[in-house]
Image (cartoon, rainbow, N blue to C red; front, side, top):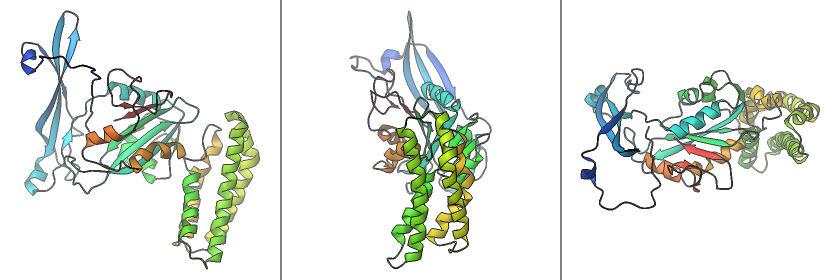
Length: 359
């Protein structure tokens, strides 16, 4: 994984070139993979070091100037090279101190939202241009300081959220993707907006003469709309999380009970492989997660918070020439006041306290 760091220099000093630094001492920082990471993802063979990627920067110390040389070791698989197939090239990670610090804050939160979306990177080492890559998004809940962390990964494997969220032990709200089931010590929360979308898609796909299926889908939408209407009322009344929790027990719980009874009844009456049947089965299979928002008044009924944050990658930025382009286009507005050392900390705007960071 590559980290791009661009210093915010307003002016470039004239007369400086590589020869200007030849007499300076060099402080070398090397980044390597652990033995566990030196495994080829294709053949499960040991990786060898094929090259190095070196980036130099100036480090100014009172009374002395030294060159800090960051060396990221690059590894490849000899077995893949012998087989003449696409060789996975893995670069040792270079720590991002600000990202890591925000990550630490994120893991201490009681509620997190997560989502992921596909990306196509055309010139990525070790991958075909037609293959899919993924951007993962992790963000805090509505009652916490807004933090949005983006993590690029070459796949949708469950190991990515499991590793990223190691140490987090609160509520994790997602759209129901089973890859998040691998995250340990969390309470998974579902998304009623995702469930509702299944019924709207069913209605759009139905022929005009499918009156029975249309009535059933509309009934399901009615239940979902009741739940969202109640949530809007709670917000409009400016209730505290504790008050919302009590209101949900009083008003939301009966709607959920009626909805569950209706779903179990219709499950026996519709074809399981039909669009309507799939929507019903999704709700039943996800029911414990869908209703987990009842456990705490701070939990939202949907994962829309994460879905909105991942939209820049869905609309207009689904294809990038290199992984560097991902960082450049992640969030269109850059808050230069957030940090005065680099420009890859992407924020939602200067008037917001949101912190959006891409790794």
